[in-house]
Length: 280
Image 1: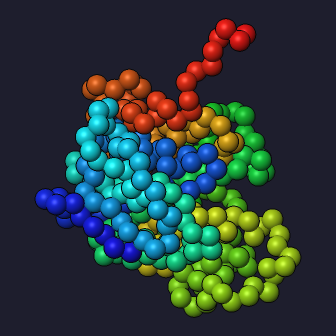
Image 2: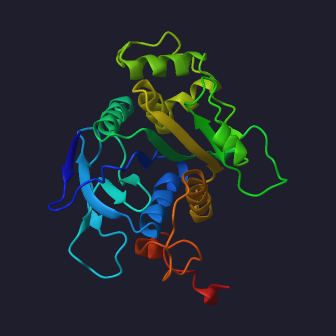
């Protein structure tokens, strides 16, 4: 993975926290990073070139007027007043190469001096084992602070540790071995012909990112929410708000339309125009 810095720009030397999405159902992590980039007034400082991510190109996602800037698959942003860097991922990883991609991102984090990585992702609602209707949107977390995935800071914020993480389960152990370089991904798994439900979550992108950052000795926290496909902007607001609380971000939206958050211009066409009411 190559980090290409735009001319005249640089990453703040005091930046030590990295925020990035893990692609999953509803693209909630990506939408949350969009909110964080726009609302913290983060500046794009460059992009990442990696052989394991599919190419794509589009218009600037944040500016209301054309300025000649293109959106690329992996973009790097710096919010200097918050001391955080953000990576936005706009296209999927090549099939079967997620662990290699996660390793490359972990190497990038080490090279740029990051000591805490925050991964934002979503999970399929139909796999939620126990539904708590006593509150609204629930945020779950997974941290490398302790071997069981717990973290006191997250607990104080009222979040629940994600219960599906079991470091002794066979797939999580195998993923950890891959991340640490003690196994090869092409090795045949003894249980690959008989997968169980507990083997599902370690196969997701956030799990690979968590394992690879952890293998590099970097503190990593995953913030997770359950959702279904559809308009997932409410989940994106929840993940962005959770990120802001955990990191104590300064959000400046003096000219925004979404309350605390500055809505990215590209969101105006995410779900198309409203329905024609005459049909009703």
